[in-house]
Image 1 (tube, rainbow, N blue to C red):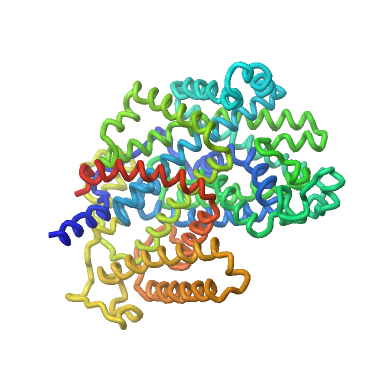
Image 2: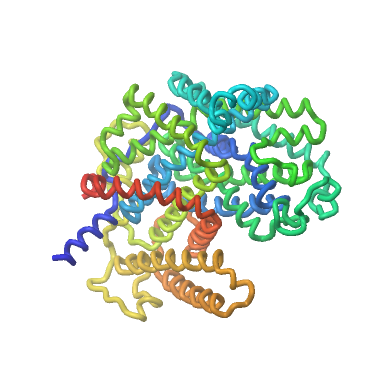
Length: 610
């Protein structure tokens, strides 16, 4: 009885969502071309992060080697983007990592993904608030901060005085949320300001190469002494000088933080229904937007560290302040004003909509309480949700620093990206299913009034139907490396599922050893032996997956180099997660405990997937 109960419980955890169930779609009444999707991805990705993220990372974590941090973070995001691109071609629905994991590897992983995305969007709200108030304060000569310290701090505790301005911004965001600006008109404004952002960043890059000093990438202890700075003899507050003042560990730590700057590209996969040719334009939009964002970040970080010695970049400072250092005061105000306007325009789209969208999707699937679905349809619920999450974002000010929140945001997203890469790996080796009703779906996407679609074109592993499988399959050692069928079978699909899960565990253990075993670099034989054993196991398991037959389904885009690229994506994502601090993981753990309490008390029993 106990075994049967545990078996039923395990089946509930991994039950998959059939795409025959209605998928929540969000349409805005506008058809988007590939160029529109690129503008959307760049506009959402090149956001508030670049305006002060470069200062934080260069000043405290990486120094001039921040350019390498952005390179590592960009490549990591590109790997994730390739996986998203294949999924958008395989599952032509407006979705996210939540939907992709739900139809592929099961309910518990979908809940973890969705719950993490909610956390990420709430953190985003706070970061937008902080960027907006910092930029506005800089524009008016830091009068807000001076007033808070000189007048208000005499009557209230210092922590309240330091952060009082954020509450005013929350009120402003509330007013912004209840505006009734038509989407078509707003999108034109959004694209215009995306172009303005790129022009401003281009101006910063050109300025850096004109006014920059290459010596700022070769600083020595004598430079610190000339600047009357102390405690510079080792990896202390200022590092050890040179291009990598905080060493290789600083690059890894900075890469984990810089990853936040590339997160916004996933918004493209929520626009499937609005795309003219989603199976082609979505993958192109993701890859092209990521490349544009990387070039922008790489150039801006290089220009910043060439114009300003990294040790003069203070926490909380913004990108335009670099122009004060080189004496270009008019440029400072022009760049600050452009940033201020672009953030304000982005607030309309990026503050509450992603949070409401994710909660609505999970509530409709009954993984969260059904009444939360009114967060999208009810006016009162929309306003109250804005107030609630705005207050939560403001309260975060008192408990977390900016870097802590960036790391918290990155952890949730890295987990989601890892799960998407795992889904791509699993789906590539699953048997095909018949796609009756695919024509009806195409007609529906083109605006037809046909009858309700009975089957969708997708990758739902739970609904895969065997087409050319043998009458009976038995697992054997020879079958692991020399499968008898040239096409995927249920047995080969199960082998890949098990091996992929094992690889995820082995890669996590390898990252733990590489990141937190200090004796590894000193030649200690114990950690070296552990690493070698893990690598042998990883290589053998990867070989088993590689030998299995892949699906022959024709798609506009497929991730090249499967299974290596998805596994590389998982490895890099997990390794970056290992660079986070213990406080970040503790906060993340508390959030996940709250989520699991909700899921196991309600979601697992009430889920629409039976």
